[in-house]
Image (cartoon, rainbow, N blue to C red; front, side):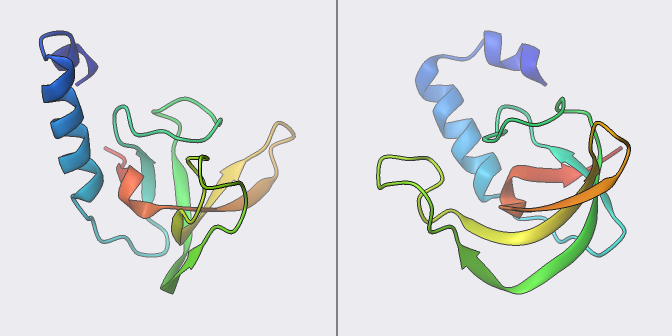
Length: 104
């Protein structure tokens, strides 16, 4: 998928990524998910590193951190994902589900 971006203009890439961000997928507890290509907005393991859905929130929580210039300001967090930390323990974090897709 990332190789397709090499052939796109900047404007085409922006339009493609905006469409991908707005393409909503439905997840359920237990699903394995990975970042959508070029939509990772947090420092975390590689794109293909799976996470498990532990909760799908019925109402979005808006991130209150940062300032209006931050990419996290009022980010709509609507899914909780479990991942393994460096010690192999399961940790959970809230994310914007639009940035994820089912792992294949």
